[in-house]
Image (tube, rainbow, N blue to C red; front, top):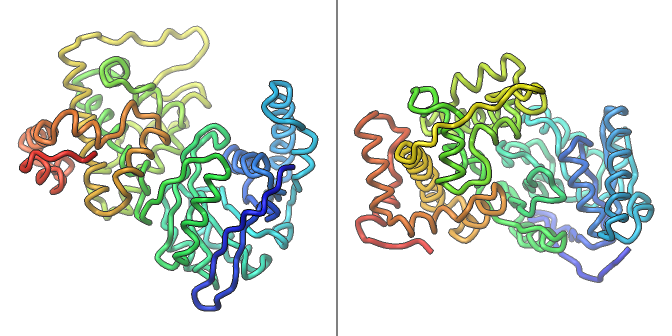
Length: 406
């Protein structure tokens, strides 16, 4: 494997413990599901020895076989030199003791705060004081997870996107306790893993899962009101909006057990702000076990032989749908910038690299003009009288001053 002498130094604030990450650093991953195994693949491909842990032996064996098969295919295509060498860099462990020599451990397990806190506390009993601990949570508080640790300054968020080997974006999230030097070091490490890192404030949903909520929520609201069916809304967002997938196709692809739970978590974490309110339509799918493609039924029916519904290709209606949803997305991005969730550049990168939006939302606002976006939102607010449609104060200021973001 390729090794370099590059070293990233991190100092624990209170004890001044020198933490270093090099290519020789052993990386541990908690959880051998699709995300955990994907992160492990990324770390191994970047030249690290990797310890993959799961307390479920069947899941761990499945991950091992899948990784072996993936590396064999990549070698066959000439994308890696040796599948055998990469598999040789792995250790598969059913015990947390396997992390004893790790310098970085990344958690990728169920999105439950109580479970994550318990696991971090247990891992800390095994690893050295210089080991960095990271969570792959998509929306939970990194600060809360760090509070479960004796050395909270070494805890941070590293949120990869699924599938981790293919998706470039990684959200790097410091807790309020995180050593300030850890973040630039982690950002550089992600660059060396051939990823595109962005820095996000520790707020619910970070960047992507906060800003993207209206793509799903407003689409479902339009459907529930009977303005258009799901096929027509998906058509409007792909053909007119320029998105690669419509909101209903995408939620079925993600899985409602994931997408709905993130929406509910963000809603609760934002003190029940109506902008993030979940829908009964999606909750009922979850309750029925209709999780989308993986169960054969979600918003769409994927049963073999069942024809997909055809959209009503009404351009006027399609424009209304796309304009309404895009205005809501722009407002979220602008408000995230206003509240210091991320820089303008990182917001643009996150939405184009993390969820493949056709363009950055701040740039989209500039192309429309802030006044147009504000007009769409204010009309919705006047109609509904719901805080869901309140415009960000920054958007209002931009419109008044006829200013641009990028």
